[in-house]
Structure formats: C-alpha cells, structure tokens
Image 1 (cartoon, rainbow, N blue to C red):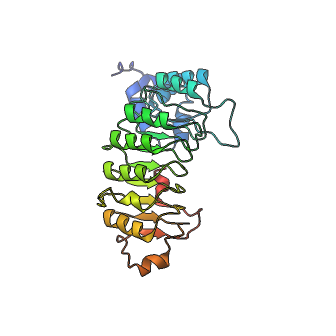
Image 2 (image 1 turned 180 degrees about the vertical axis):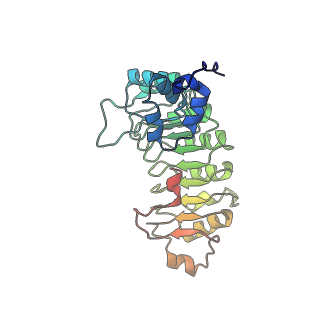
Image 3 (image 1 turned 90 degrees about the vertical axis):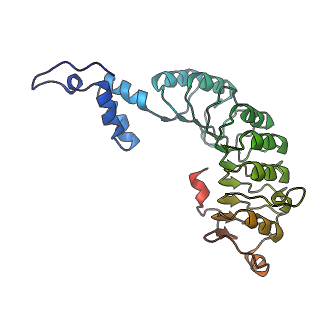
Length: 306
C-alpha cells in the first residue's frame, strides 16, 4: 500500500491528493486502450502506473527494443509480434529474439508470431496458454515436441501453414496437453494424417474447435479407432474444408460422437455434398450449421478462437 498523500489546502494538486493505488483504481475504470494511453500522458508518475498495469502489447522490435519494452511494461501477459508477409522488417523475429522474450517477459501467457522466421520454441515458455505460429514456415516437429514437454497447460495453438509438422509430434502434444488443449488450428499442415486427428479427438477431452482444412491425407479413419470404436467429444467446431478423402460414412461416425457440434465446415469435400448427406439420412446435431459450399470469405465461429 502506498504512503498516504500529504495534506493539502483548497489548491492541492491531484498528485498530492491521490495515492498510487487510487490512481490505479481510476485507470481500471477506463475503457478503450486509447483512453489508457492518454492517462499515461499526464505526467511521469501516471505514465509509470499506466505502464505497470498494461497487459497487452503489439510491436515490431529487435532484441534491444524488446528488452526496453519488457522493462517498461513488466506486467505484459499478451505479446503480439506478428508480421505481414508484404510489410516485414529485416531480419524479422528470429530464434534469438525468442530467447530475449523468454528471459524478459516472465509473465507471458499469450504469444503471437504469425509470419515470423522462428524455428524453435524456448523451454522457458512453461506458462504459455496460447501460441500462434500461423505461416511460420520454419516451424517443425522440434517445436511441437518442445511444447509437449514444457507447455502442458497450453489451451490454444495455431500452426496453420506449418508444413513441416508430422504425426509423431502432434500425437505427443495430444498426450501431453490432454487436460488443457481447447483450440487447435492446423490447416495446410500437409504431413498430418488420420493418426494425428484421431489422437487429438480421443485424448483431448476439452477440445472445442479444430481446423484441419486442406490436410488432404485425412480420411474417414480419423473418426474410428483400430477396433472401429467411435469416440465421445464435446467438440463444437470442426473445419475440414478440402479434405478430399472424407466421405459421408466418416461424417456419420463423426456426428455420432460430437453431439455438441455447432459448426461443421465441409466446403470443397467432393465426396460429401448436401444431397449425398440427405440421401444417407444423416441427422446433424440440433442447431449445427453445416457449410457445404459457402464462400471462403464467410465468417464462422472459429474466428473468435483463431
């Protein structure tokens, strides 16, 4: 608790009247980030308080600037260093920067690195709940094994477009994060097969949303084990667009196991059409939206997760 402010007369300044804790209480009542930033422009004291209370940060920075940001914003929980493919800076975020992040941002819970040139995940990221590595082309099995070993509380993982990831590391992740993983996006992971999806569906009981779009090795076998038993899941969102080998039989097995399904993406699955599902008498869960031929620009519920 801060020391009480000195007594003042009618002309006392606000900094003489309010303690740090009272100023923090004012800050918590501000809404948009712009209002919080304006709070820090009043004076150095208010800037220090505003910086210590900041929880989200988006930046484009190298090692030196990252250290400065960590010193100024010690309470950061969410860090976004994602880059645009058309407007990146050289050399961008690389593995050396991840060492700095791991050593400087000690309370980090959410890390976004879309389109970055990273290849490994640091062992110090034990507290991570969400990691987004969309289109990080250098990310492979080594990174996923590291997540399985060190980040056992991981809830959200985005590895779409990481084409060097294979079944073995995903199966390790499914076992390591079986009691935490809720959201997984791995579209365009072209080495992924039924073994990965089956392991995730059988082991990750908290799984809410999964995207395996364009993983063209996925077949009906993903939804059956070696004894042809079906699984039981609370899955709400399943995206399988352009999974060319999935058939109506596989969809039947899947909806028998996913009674809570709210959204099913079957676009560009040539063996599964609206007519073929109706002819087979498939009964989708009540309230489930099935997208057979919608535009790729259409929004879907997975947007809030990924």
